[in-house]
Every structure is written in structure tokens, then in C-alpha cells.
Length: 548
Image 1 (cartoon, rainbow, N blue to C red):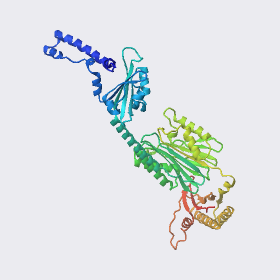
Image 2 (image 1 turned 90 degrees about the vertical axis):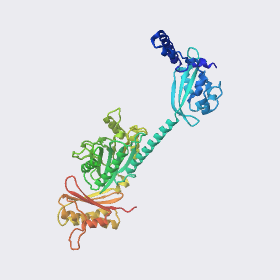
Image 3 (image 1 turned 180 degrees about the vertical axis):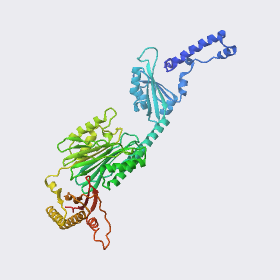
Image 4 (image 1 turned 135 degrees about the vertical axis):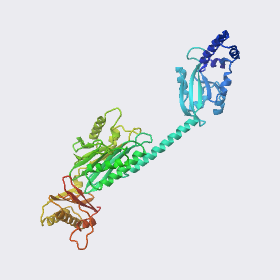
């Protein structure tokens, strides 16, 4: 092959030829006396022209890999010494598929076809070759003579070794993967490993970390059984991303569980969290929704600190959106939160979620919430099934750029044989000496009709006697006794109009009172008290039912 003729079309040859012409013009001008004679003598030193250089020798000395192919079958015309060192000798005249199998293995032959057809150079970055090293390949069209295609056209393959850069990039990606795994592991470890299972609710939750980067978010959720049949539900989102956001989330979640034991109204819980968030990090804010479900009231009492509205689908399929009040996010300070309520009776389904489920860069947030409402209206099945359907309907994938937390709760309507396991009975207590005997007789009759074992029957009547006596002595009207059974426990609750909460104390031998709460705490599996929204208090205790 006439290599000199091919070299005339190699990249940059024409530019160098033009530069050589300019140099000749400059020399002619200098000969006319434009510069001193000494400079003119210096310019007369003969410099070899590019066309006179031995092109093959130059390419053989290039450290990069060079191969030249020609024709539609890309028959091999030349490989330099660096190419031979990397892949061994290659037979010239053979098609590239046989002569250069390494290019075929990394998928470069279709690119040669494209370069030959288009006449435009193409580059592929960091392809790993069979020798274990990484190269960046540049394929440039070259032409013998004038014109486009035909047998005189070829492709110059120029490969630069970028192994060090590729290995450094892979180490960086591996480091980012480890950081992400650490952050995700921390995030998941701070979330509840198993949700608590209230008697009257069926609950499922899903957490999906966003994207593939290390910066996971601070989304969290929790379910807290408060006793007396009541359940607290929490969902929140710490602004920002990464391990720091996950750590703040863990502190807030722990604090919520501690504050929930005080059995305070939702807005008071958020008030406490707001102050704590400022102490943890004044620059870190979070949104949060805290709700309490009481099966006796058939509603969800909630408060929101900048969080998205709770959605509830009633038994008829109508979806309701929780209205105001909604205060600013936690950590802003100076705001008095307020509680609201939304119906959640038997047969209803509620959804609590973070913004990753409904917020998209190309649409308004209200549109995302409206789409979620439509998806909830048509979603049926168990809470986990509904949870998965809502995530799919929102288009959340593994490449989603934000964390997603969703919690679905159902208040099932108990009918048939299952309905016999969920009963309620209540008695209005009127003051006077006959109130306590009437309460004991009422409790005895109810527990007998519920077919409790004798031992549990007697313990329940004793607990009723002590709680009613405590209310008669220390409380004020109106007073009410409520008995409730579920498939797991018996709940006894007495309410009155005084907001002073009883406490368990040790009575001295000479004391005539102070033993009632101690007796209840001893015989019951759990007990507690709380202030009621309208003023007053409720004192309750629970007994776990025997299995079977």
C-alpha cells in the first residue's frame, strides 16, 4: 500500500501544509531585507517537510494504539508497534472482524461502519479491551484521492490508554456506593423494623430511598399504641439529604415516641418537637404530621407542621382531604400549632405520605395530590396492596430522585363472627352512694354476656370498682364508665370532668386511701390516664385476653 498517499489525508495534514505555505511566503519577505541578515541566515537552515517525513516511522513511535482499515469490510492496512505490543501481530489485508477481534468484542465495528458512511469522526470513551486495560477510541475517516466513499476510503482508529483514569473513576463510584449503602442502612435502621399492630387498625408502610447517589433523605414514619385502644400515627420528612438528615430523623422519631407516652393532644406533641428540632440543629427543619385514632370516636385527630394533607377514603369510596390547620415546619419556632380532625370510621382507609410520592419538577404539587386522591379512590385490598398500588401509580422507580415514605391504615368494619369479638358498652355514672354498686353490677353483667372466663370476669369487675371509686372521690361530673373488648384485650375506662391526673403512689399502713390505682396497676396488664379535649380526664386499664 502507498502509505505516503494515505498520509496526505491523515487528520491535520492539510493544516500543516497550509502552515508550510505561510512559512515560505515569510521566507521570501525576509530575503527582501525585512529582518537582519543574521536572522535570515538562521531561517535558511533546511527543515524537512511533513510529506518528506517517514509516516510509518512516526506512527510506529506513537505510544497510542493506531490501526488503519479501508473499504466496506474494513480490511486491515496497518497497525503500529504499540498496537502489536497490546494485542499481538495482526494480518494485514484481512477484514477487521477476523484481523481485529478485540475491536469486535468491545462493539467498535458498527462505529467503523458509521464513520465510513457519514465521513465524520466518532469517539467512544473508556471501553475495556480484552487485555484488561481501558481505552478511549477515536475513529477518523481518511480518503485516498478525492471524493467520498468507494474502495479508496478508510478509517483511522486511534486508541488512548485511559486505564488509570477509569480505575480512579471506578474507585470513586465504589466509594459513593459504599457511602450510599451506609446512609441507607442508617436510615432503615432508624425506621421501625416491625410496625406495631393496633387492635382496631390494619397498617402497612413502605420506604423507598431516592436515586442512586449517597444522599438519602430523612423520611420517617411510626405507629405507637397509646393504650386504651388508641393509636398514634406519625410521618415526617427532614429537609436535606445524607447521613446528617437521617441522624436528625432518628432523634426526632425517638423524641416522638417519648412524647407520645405523655398522651398529649397532637398539637402539643408538635409544640414539643418544634423546640427540640431547634436544639438539635437550628439550620435543619422538618415537616411532620401526628395523628391519634380513637375507635370509640370514629375519627382521626391530627396536627401538621408543614406536612402534606392526610387523605381518607370512607366506606362509600369518597376521598376526603384533611383541611387546615397546618403550621410551619418543625425548627422554625414561634408558632402555636392547633389540632384538627377528619372522620375515620369502620370501613375507612387513610394515607399518610411524604412529598417524594406526589412532588414532580414539571407539575404543580396540587396536581400530584389530586392524582394520589384518584389512585386512592380506585385502590382496594389490604393496606400493603394499596400501598404498592399508590407507589406504582405515582410512577416511583429505582431512579426516583427523592425518598418516598407511605403509610396506609384501614379501620375494618367488623361483621359476622368477627363482630362478636369487638364490643362496646357504656354507663353514665350519677353521683351518690349507689353509683359504685350500679357500676359493678353493670360490669358484671356485660362481662358475663361477653363470655369471659371467671378469673378475667372478677378482675374486670375489681378494676371497674377501683376506677369508679377513684373518680367518685377525686373527680367531678359528668362521669362515665366504658367497657370495650377487642379480639385481644379488655379495656376499662372511666372519664370525669376533673383534669387532675392520678398517679400511682405507695400508701402507708395508716392511710385510708391511695391504694386504688396501685391495685389497678397490679392486676391489669397496662394502665394510664390522659386529659380529654373538652376538659377533664380519662383513666383506663387493659387486660390481655387468653388465647383461644
